[in-house]
Image (cartoon, rainbow, N blue to C red; front, top):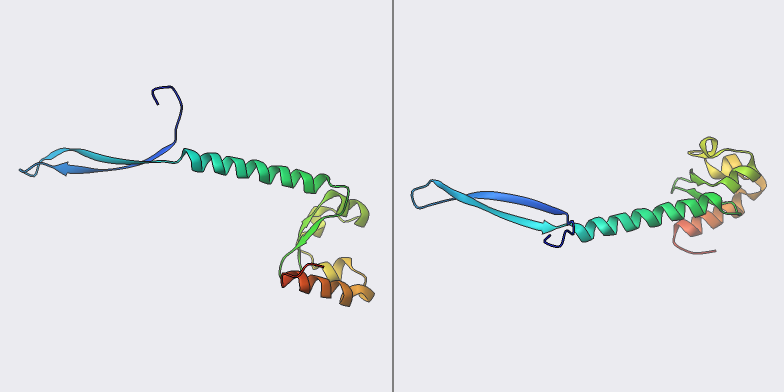
Length: 119
């Protein structure tokens, strides 16, 4: 910009012709992507902060997919279980980490959560 501010644009252009069919110039259209870029950077920052919070929390935090497999395993979960994040990822939560006598209780809680019900 005139003031020296850097903006991010996407541009597309097309030639236009005069009455004889010769190319007389180009029509260019730009779209300002600066706000979108700034929003993406902000969301990336927030995601990094949340990841840092999860990884350093003083409570076990874990995630599972709809199949019941571990998708997230923070440091505290690793500390109290003895399973590193790398070892835990992809393993079925119930069968691998929960004592069989608690499968029904924990499985019920997980099913409710997957249906959108908090417990």
